[in-house]
Length: 220
Image 1 (tube, one colour):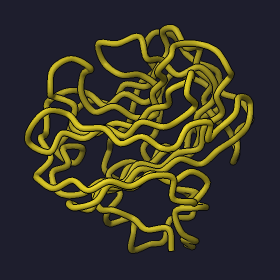
Image 2: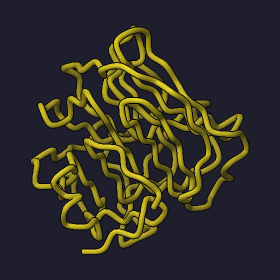
Image 3: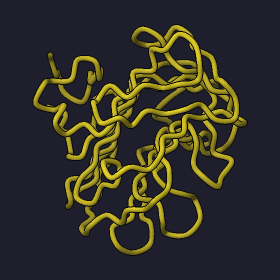
Image 4: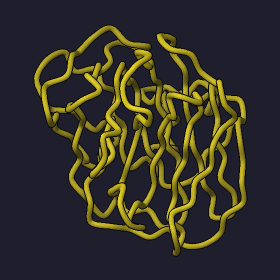
């Protein structure tokens, strides 16, 4: 197994020692059906909700195409998903170019209140990514620079937190950073891939090779 840094993290090639820190790896290589398999070994398998989506050719193998109005992957809450110290979220994305003003990669918890453990989105109007954590108070966000992606192109997104610093990467290059300290607040809510609970923030386009780790990975 080879790991070439966050820039080219393809979950099926995650270095063996990093698998110990993976809490979920969703390759999205299924060819049919509504089940979404977790390759991390933690059993965080998902189920399509709001429709079946479409299994299409992706960045690597297959990908999941979502309609932007109702479809997403729902993954039941589990202790391995309740992260308190560090987190890394990585995925490939292809945005169709329309849909809601906010669209979701990952969201562990609902939009309302302070009960969102960790999440990563795009803002379609400003074309930036939006990284949310709750470190013991109100939710806080970190945004990348604007106009960092275009419709109908593949990009790699990553968001990391090491207990002191948050960093956003796009295609392996640092796009933003901001200090934050504190213990992350967990919840009993499901993890949504392509949707944020209690919101209209559905993904419209394709998602591929998604993964979450319980520590902050680096670009090197």
